[in-house]
Every structure is written in C-alpha cells, then in structure tokens.
Image 1 (tube, rainbow, N blue to C red):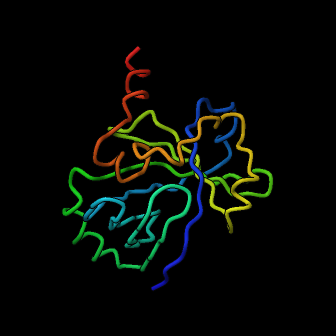
Image 2 (cartoon, rainbow, N blue to C red):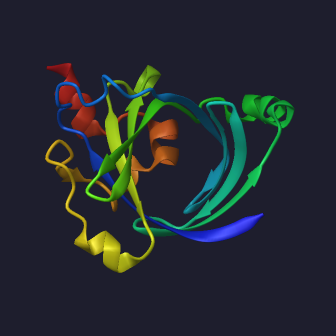
Length: 165
C-alpha cells in the first residue's frame, strides 16, 4: 500500500477534434464509491480488468491518494455497496506536449460529459501547463466536477442545462 500526493488538473472538453480518438483504443472504467464524507472517500475501480481500492483525501490540485490492488472477487463483493454512487466511462490516453492526458468519455447518467485529466510530478509543472484548445474550461477547483460528486449528483447544472437545448 502506497500513499502518494496526486497533483492533477482537470478540464471539460468543449469539442473533440476529428480523428483524435479514431486510432486509440479506450479502456472501459467502472468505479464506485463505497463511502464519501467531506473531502474523504473510498473508491473501487475496474480499469480494463485491473481492480483497485483507493482512499482519497483532499480536494483540488493536490490530494493524498492511497491505493491497493484488490481481486476481481473482492471488487464484485464490494460493487453492490456503491449503488447510486457510480461512474462509467471510456478512458483514452493521449500524448500531448510531453504530458499524458487521460480523456474520459462518460456514459450513462453522465453522458455526454467529456473530461481531460493531466497528472504532474510537482506543482510548478502544473502551473506551466497549457491545455489543448479542445479542453479550455478548467474545473480543477470546482467540486461539482469531482468524480465522487458526479457519481452522487450527476451532471453539473450548467452542463445539464446546455444539453437540454
């Protein structure tokens, strides 16, 4: 078990450039929250057959992340506990200016949301990063875009309203 500081920025994808995802194979991700209270939550995840349990603490740019591997059987035993607090998405990994972007295309109750996450080794790197033009709206410090809140509350109001028209 390792506890690491996670430094990450998050952006809403406002459009997808043609051909961006055509040659990339996504990984299907299912994640659910066993418990969530304040800025602490416990998440289980199946990322293409790799099963983990993670305790996350904090909010925004820098969070403490403690992760362990679990078996498929353990994941399946815990999955029912996550009912009403789940996220399903296709994750694409994309190289961009020396960084690795995780582009998440959400499905189910979170469609048509698309987010890009970028992890950094330190805060200086995070401040120097300029996102691609298709990801211009930064939501790193907006609680409604945290995965745990998306799982619990659904699409943020502004995005849900935009999709109604």
